[in-house]
Image (cartoon, rainbow, N blue to C red):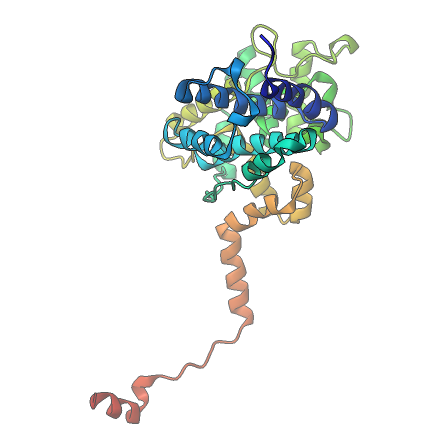
Length: 337
C-alpha cells in the first residue's frame, strides 16, 4: 500500500524536523508522538478512519475540534492536557504550511484554534518542618532506603523536575568544592546547581556504596531500580507517595498538602524566596525560560503579602476619617428621610 501524505509528513516531523532542526528533547518528541497516537485512535474509533488511509485533507478544523472535545469529555482531560495536545498539533501544522503551501489555508485555520484558558491553581509547597519529617521516613538500614533518602534530598535541594532527576548520571555529580550537579532541563538547556553540605555528605556515601566512582561508571544512572535501569517517572511518584503516607501516619497532626515530586521543586523555590533571594536568582536556579514562571511563587506567599501590608501600614499615616455620628446637622437631615 502506498503511504499517505499524512503518514509521510508526520514521520518527517517526528524523526527529522523536531530532533534535527528544532533540537527538541526526547521527552518533547515523546509528548508530541503521544498526541498523534491519541489523534489516530480518535479518527479510527470515532470516525472509522483507518490510520493507514488517513490523509491531510481529512484533518480539518472540525475534526481537530472534535478531537479536543473528545479529550475533555470522554478522556476527562484537564485544560492543561488539552492545551499540550493542541500545542503539538499547532507545531505540526506550522511545519506543514512551509512544507506544503497548497495546504496553507487549512493549516492556518487549525492554527487559529485557541488554547483553552487555564485556572491558576495555588502552589502547594511543604513547610520546613513538614519537609524535615518527610525526609526522615526512608529506612537507612536498608540499601533501597538509603537510595530513597538521597533521591528525596536531591529532589528538594536541586529543585529538579522529576525527569531531570532520573536523567542524572554519575558524571553529572561533582562532590569537590564547590559541590554541584549538572542538570539537563527543557530544551536540552544545561544549568549548574550548587548543593548543600548535608546533601553532599549523603551523595558521597551513596556513590561509594553504589560503586559509581570509577571512570567506567560515569554514564551509569545515578538512581537505578533493582534491574540497574533508570528509575521511571511513575517509580519516583510511587516513592514520594509512599513516604508521604508514612510521614502522615507517623505524625497524624502534620499538615501535608497533596505531595508529588514537583512539590519538592515548589518547596525549594518558596524557601529561597522566603529567605530573601531575588526572583532573578530563583529563575536561574530553577531553569525557567521566563521570569513570569517564577513570579507565581511571589503571588502564592501569603506571609510575604501580609508583611508587605504591615510595612505599608506602618509608613502610611492613619487617615483622618470624620464620624457622621457627631455631625448633628447630618443626623437631623437623615431623620427627615
